[in-house]
Amino acid sequence: MAPPLVFFAVFFAYPVASIVGRGLRRDGGWHLGAVGDVLGDGSIRHVLWFTCWQAAASTGLTLALALPGAYVFARLDFPGKRLLRAVVTVPFVLPTVVAGTAFLALLGRGGFSDDLLGFRLDTSVWAILTAHVFFNYAVVVRTVGGLWAQLDPRQEEAARTLGAGRFAAWRRVTLPALGTSVAAAALLVFLFTFTSFGVIQILGGPTYSTLEVEIYRQTAELLDLPAAAVLTLLQLAAVAAILALHAWTVRRREATLRLVDAAGTAHRPRGGERVLLAAVLAVVALLILLPLGVLVARSLDGPGGYGLTYYRGLASADADGGTFLVAPLETVWNSLRYAAAATVVALLVGGLAAAALVRRAGRLVRGFDALLMLPLGTSAVTVGFGFLITLDKPPLDLRDSWLLVPFAQALVGVPFVVRVMVPVLRAVDHRLREAAAVLGASPARVWREVELPFVGRALGIAAGFAFAVSLGEFGATVFIARPDSPTLPVAVARLLGRAGAANYGQAMALSTVLMLVCAASLLVLENLRTSADSAGEF
Image (cartoon, rainbow, N blue to C red):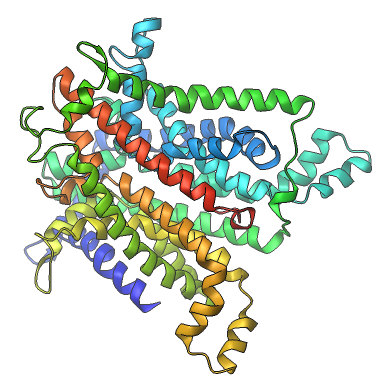
């Protein structure tokens, strides 16, 4: 447990604590009066109210649209299911700026709805809610669907044999079993939308702002560190409460359910299930495929008609008027290099953390588990800015090191590695390890010859998720990426921040490239995944 704790202490707790301390300490003492000043500000209270209610509305809308999809992917067998499952996951690993860009191309000025239907929804709350559903649809499908596929269908069939109708059997048998999983998924969606940054930045306009966006504004634009520190503490407290609830629901589910092999529960659609399948496919087409398709179409719609004009422009650093020191296309290589390094770090830290969680128990271990999840909801802006002001002197002077970006990206990769590895490690019979040790095998040999054959596939899946989320990390990277080696999401944001059709078109082209890279990694993941890997966690 020590190496993961040291990693989080150095690269998470220390930068965040330094930012908070710098904001609230002056002349050697604490000035907590800033808390009252910030919370008494009417505009800040409006931001807090909007952050909460848009997260609640986004969560409700996501559950309403994605729960039928969870059933379809869990219990129905149809052609193209594996490919479609990968497609619905693509938005979740896309950078939030790309998700916002896709909806800007769909609902904004000159967008699909503006051209064909004569109305715009950008800078409206509806665009924000829809983009959040687009982004989090896969969270519900994978979290709830993974468990739904492993529930024994014979329990519901027994209830119907005893006289219960189809709906009554579902309500009294299946729904209670799924309740904790639905709650866990809802809490995750609420967490991601509560800390929303890129989507709000692009679609919110000057009217709408979340806590995360306000922290960025106070830090980078107004240089008001006391206000940013108070808001960061507020967000940390809210995220800690959400994660505590999530951990409680997961433990409750693990303690009460008996699961079966998911491979035997799916069947061909019959009767009304064909209508449900058609409705889910229509939702996926409108909600996910249409924005992604419009993004691709915009990237090809050049000044002389459809073609590769904007893609060719990505090969030159001068074509955009000097936004970059390098050609935008080189950011693809930068992102791949950073993501590969971040994946190695996340596997090492997350693998050791997962092993510690499996072999130990108690409140301390549960607290450690919650700590591993905390970077998912903590302000990435605070983490990135904290890196700049803390890792700038020996023995950790990383200001000029390219490793700064992978370390920040690994913070969001570790929770995914832990969530994938823990269920698989728990499934390994500890008596096999003990027998190998009694026969004289060293700990390294026990791991290589006993555990690795069981967990090798899960390691590949964990590496794929860590790689995909590292590719899309934006909030911290935008602060610490060097000007001569920006990542793909940072390059997209820079292009969108400049006026002109050429910059907008190149942003669409670069977003399309990133989307294809993410989709390719997810397809590899789907080929690695088996029914035994679906333990109900994301």
